Length: 219
Length: 219
Image (tube, rainbow over all chains, first blue to last red; front, side):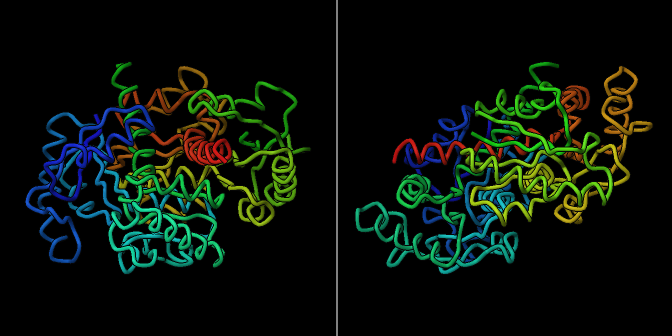
């Protein structure tokens, strides 16, 4: 089992399992999704990130104790990833670092798209001078804004602006883009490579999970 | 189709297709394998690398012209990757950078194992201070040496030495290790995460190929 940590609080089972179901469907692996307590708005500034860190660590430890062989922090900012890696023996994948490393391995000029003012620190640090620019679709500050035809047009327009600046690979800095299927829209409309943060974390976590299971099955 | 470049010369179809067949089997993608001319011993020093660069570029351009949508340079030293990326429009994945980026995304201490005196420059640069150490199994200077029971024992002993130094992820700096299935041996014997260079290039190339095919199928 892969243990997936949602960095917000929800009692809505469908919301809770959005990322895990996508990963199960794409890569054929079992995923258990859990969310941190008492943060219905998730992480949106330094204080809420600091508050979330011990909760993510505790949740990760609990998922490991339940038998998860790989953990995923399903947020492009990779909150608490260092702290959690220190506390568990299993591999921990973060959406932000997974997406960034995939982009770096492709070796093309990268543009990052998100719904905040800038790319998460972890993505800026990893991408370095490969990062041509960061863009936020106009008037889009949450993923609900994108779930309308007008919102979709804004996202396509933002992707076009990235490509006009020489970007060859678009990386998402928001896991909410995965839920609404934005990657496939951009791939179809613009013939551009898109690295979706949930797809990226799932690709790496599932590869590790498969090798760990294969090993256990044989021994 | 994924176009895979073998960085040695062979007229033996089985040898030529070793990496491509592994990738096809693991990830369910079509791979066409081609090799560079007039270098039966491959790349083993600066001169032979310099000689190979224009051949790799020409072969990559030819594979792109034949319709390959992703190219792979199937060698842990990533020879000619920069030069080829400048000459083609399709993504180019290298074994060394792919394996290194996967290891970095796992976020654990890395040990590299190969059959040369040191890790390829590209892997050293990318892994930076994540790289705890590099090891060459004793008395093993080519992969044929590993294909005996005694050779297998030497590889396991080398992996054990890496783990004694705190290594949590072993990365192969030799694509020949893939051909002999060494990764699964170490996973089973030592319960350690292993990033195999051919598996790594295949994971990334197949993910890109699938997204490009999906896009084309839909449009």
